[in-house]
Image (cartoon, rainbow, N blue to C red; front, top):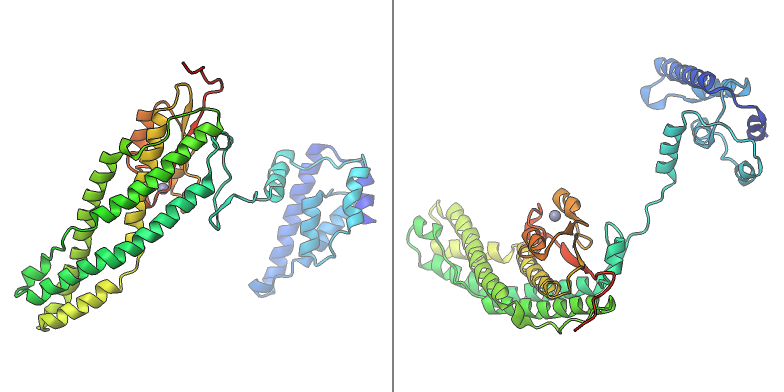
Length: 378
Ligand SMILES: [Zn+2]
């Protein structure tokens, strides 16, 4: 057995090994160069250089470790090491002194650490598993994911049928009635959908607040049941402002399309028909982001409200566990412990992390860990 034979050879002193290793590399490189000189660059025959390495090994001038041996075997089209061979390393106390131990260890660490299977919620794989403090916090991640995604899907559907269609009808009518390009440029859909939005936000806040209370209970801390009355201002004002932004956004899309196609003298009725087609054909991604964002605010407002009423001595953390395409700012805030609820609110003022490059798409939230010893209740 070649491998066993190699392992019985007493290891050479380190400096000698290093020189030999470098010499071997040089020889290896020369082999590639020679092969490359008279071969097409794409089909360099590395077996030349592998043969050279083999000569070095057979002469006892070079020792191998598993990585090097695997490489030589692969490059030289040699058969894979048999299972018997692989196991005898542990039986055999006579181990090879690794070449450049630190570098080898690094390579080994890279090669052998398998990515751990990350947590799956709602059918998607998260980018990491919950951190120890997140486990301690007893967060029902799957429940949080389900609550937000189902609410978002319903709100988007309702918005399309109840609000977007009304927006489009109003805009199309305004185009038909317009007489100048300037009028087309300043279309103004009515601000509607506020109630629909705030209803959905309140409903999610209720779920999220109850869940936060349950998280505390699972940590042995009894809090008052969550009441959506505690967060109405935030939700109502956001729904109002958000409805204005969304009416403005679809109006601008309509104006933009209208002025680009009306310039050549098309009848405004025809312009109106084409604008309708354009608006109806817009993807849902804008609605998903905007409406998803307000729902994140509802969820996080409720959680923050609950944690604000929790006993002192607990810890509050940023969690970007549920975030999808996590940006750099979110990665860096992920897992941060905040000094106070005020500090947490500054970072998560109205939904996800304020510096998130994905804006409204951020799915970051706050996680509360109860103090180790809960003070006795009065
Ligand atoms: Zn982000």
